Image (cartoon, rainbow, N blue to C red):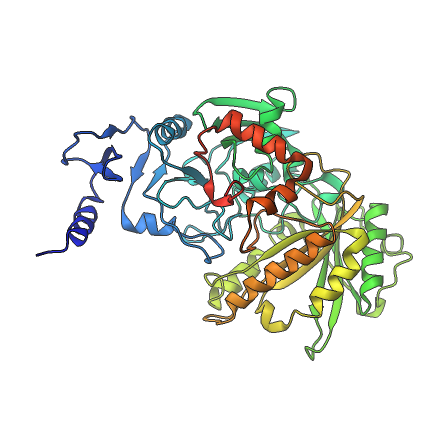
Length: 495
C-alpha cells in the first residue's frame, strides 16, 4: 500500500505551482486552485502574489548566516502595502506566524541581511519578501521617505545625486532599510550621528493586529520606540523617513598601527572625544607570522578638494607607529561602498555562502581591556577564516532609542567577530560554542548584544536580562500591538 505521507508530499509538489486560494487549518496546508475548498479560509485579494513553489520556499528557509534553517509555508511578494495589511490579518485569523525578510545583497542573486541566526525566519509561516516594497518616494534636502525594502545603497545613490547622503552608515550598504530599522544599524559614524535608527524620524508600520499606522516621537511614541531596534516584535515596518545631511565630495583616510592594546584603545577614545574624524573603526589584526595581535585604527575625514584635511592637527598627540601609517583619498561614493570589493572577493573564493557564526557585542568601556585580553587570547586565525574582528569605541550619548541596549557608560565598544570560515570547515559548531562563552563573559562584565549575531541557547531569561528595565516596555508593546504573537518568531524573545 502506498505511503500516504509520500502521496501528500507529491500532491503538494504538483499543486505548488498553482495559484494559492486559501488556508486549510484542518490539514495545516495551503489550498490551491482546483482543489476542494471545503473548510478553507479564502485568501484575500492581493496586488502581488503568494507563492509556495519549492525554489522560493528554499530561498526563504535560510539567512545570511546559513546556520539555521526553517522553511515558511508561503512567501508573500507584495504588490502594495495593502498586501502586507491583508496577510498580517489573515495570518492572525488563522494561527500563522509572519515576518518580513529583507534579503538584500550587492546583486540579484546575493543574500545578505540583518539575520544571521534565524532572526527573520518564520518556519511554517508566511515570509514577506521586502523587495516587493522598494520605492524611493521622495528625496529632499533633509530627509527621504522610502519603502522598507529599499537598501541603503539605493538610497545613498539617490541622495548623492542631489548632494546629500544618510549620515549614519553600516560598513556594508546593501541591507534593507527596514531590516536595520528593526535592529539598530551601528557603524563608524555612531559617535557623531548615532545609530541609523537615531536618524529615522517617522515610520509607517503594520501592527500585529493588521492596522496600518504612522508613528514618530510625537505620534504613537510607544510604538515608534518599540519598533526601532525592537526586533520586529510590534509591527512590520513598510516605510521610513531617514534624515539626510550634505555629502562631501571626497573622503581622506588614514590607517594607524599599534602593537599595544591599551594604547590602541586610549587613542580611539581620544579621537572619539575630540570628534576629530567623521568616521573611525578599530580593528585587531593578526601579525604576519600569525603569532600575536596588532591593532589598527581606520579613520576618515570628509572634505572637498579645495580644503584638504590638516593631518598634523588630526593626528596630534597620538601614540601610533607613525612610520607605518597609511594615507589615502577617495571620491565619497568609492569610500562609502568600500566593502563591495571584499564581497566580490568572498564570492569568488567561495566564502560568501558558507556558514557564518558572527558575534556582535557592545562592551562597556571600563571593562573592554579585560574582555579583549580574554577573548583575543583564545581567537586564532582559524577562528576567523578570511573574516575579521572589530573593536571600535563609540560614545553612547547620541543613542536615543530605548530598546537598543548599550552599557550604561559614556563610552562603549562594538566587538564584532565577523568570521568567514573556509568552505566545509568542520569547526563551525565549536565557533558557536565559543560565541556563547564570549557572550556569557561579556554579560558578566555589563555588556549587551546586538540582535543580529549568532549566540546559541538564548533563553527568555537571557533576553529579560538584556533588556533590563525596558523588558516590561517590550512586553507591554507586544501585548498592545501584537497580542497573538503573530510577528517575527525567529528572535525568540518570548520563548
